[in-house]
Figure 1 (cartoon, one colour):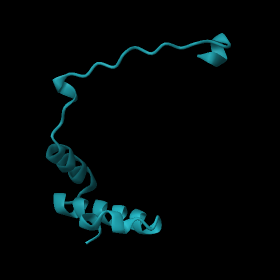
Figure 2 (tube, rainbow, N blue to C red):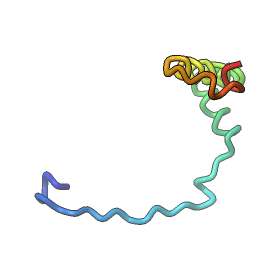
Figure 3 (cartoon, rainbow, N blue to C red):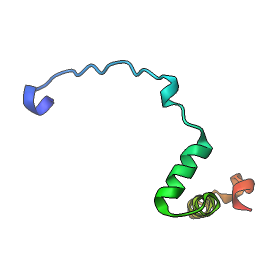
Length: 69
């Protein structure tokens, strides 16, 4: 927009949420797992491994013992 119109102020509309925007976490996990060809537990395990690796890399694993164990 700025490229096309020059220096400008762009007003964005207020976000509106409805019940259609609410998805159960288990349903979202199932959909993602299905797209990746994994079971829900495999996806959870992979996600946990990524989180643990990030925490260890940042030397923060002690702050979240439930995740790291």
